[in-house]
Amino acid sequence: MKLAITSGYVVPVDGDPIDGGTVLIEDGKITAVGRGVAVPEGMPVVDAGGGWVLPGFVEAHGHLGVYEEAEGWAGQDTNEMTDPNGARLRALDAINPADLGFADALSGGVTTAVIKPGSGNPIGGQTVAVKCWGRSADEMLVKEPVSVKSALGENPKRVYGDQKKLPSTRQGVAAVIRDAFMKAQDYRARRAAAEAEGKPFDRDGTLEVLVRVLDGELPWCQHTHRADDIATALRLSAEFGYRVVINHGTEGHLLADTLAARNVPVIIGPLFTSRSKVELRQRSLRNPGILARAGVELAITTDHPVVPIHFLVHQATLAVKEGMDPAEALRSITVNPARIMGIDDRVGSLRPGLDGDVVIWSGDPLDVMSRAQRVFISGREVYSYTDGEPVVADPYYRESSDR
Image 1: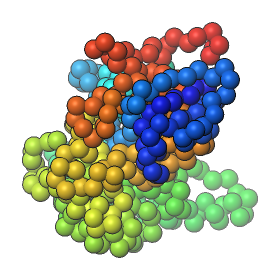
Image 2: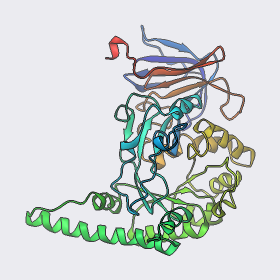
Image 3: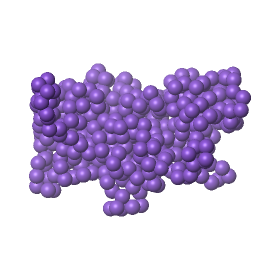
Image 4: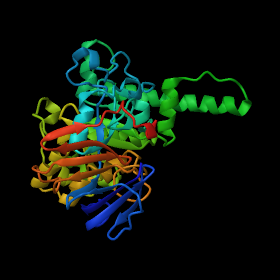
């Protein structure tokens, strides 16, 4: 796909804004960003008309396609709550691209989402990054796996406590995780010995994944709200040497200096919820700003469908209202989540070499009255808002030149 987007207020996010800027896209990739960029002859041109031109937003923690809206039981594939250790499970295998949430994502300028298993298990499974438009998860794929999801706190102890089995306490949840990593260490040693001796070896899907975490290939996305659970997450990661990413981090501001000193990123949210359980007592829209000012690398999440995904930018806006720097708020829904999740070589900013995922806004997206007017993924227009009507391109239709 080839496209030139001209006459816009271009906000690359990882660089200074460019008034009257141009973005060129060829073969689905950004090839140029700047003022006075020459548009090749014959390249289709979209006039942004002075609108704000930004990279598509990145949702770092959601359940699009695995927790389908308006489907009830039939569309609920988030948690496999029959095994405390679900490391071998893959969110990729449960994504339904027809989920209504994908269209909502586009209307809110979200073009990429990291989809994760739920938090019912101490170890929930492998996460995946996808574009928010396409016929199948395979066509939408950005990276798989991205990380491994794990949960501490109320959720897993409630799930298995109700079943009268391990784990039913916080110490039990931590023990399940610790036991799993010790088994993975032993498995890695046995595998290495078998390879050295040229002997056959019976593979274990669960332990293979955990070895990749131990080897630093996959980060550990740790669902945790309370400060004491965050401390447990840091303790476990230090014990086994894996890279941890705090997910939710409701009380992360209480340990902001520790998280910053250890370079532990936080994916904070959802922020538009009531304090529905004990762990959420300190939920506040002030917390993102506190973490960011402390030097914590921060992403904001909706945890869709807990908060509808098209409200991602509105959470950033109200975080700004409560003290967060506006530029950092934009980074928290673009380049920061992309970098935290290891997909910043594809998405998160406007620079040559990245995917042509571009959104034209009517104005500053942090203004709640601004609207995503046109959305492009890899240079293809997939969403538009014209004359008061949102239109999503049909992913099952392809022009003859694209087939």
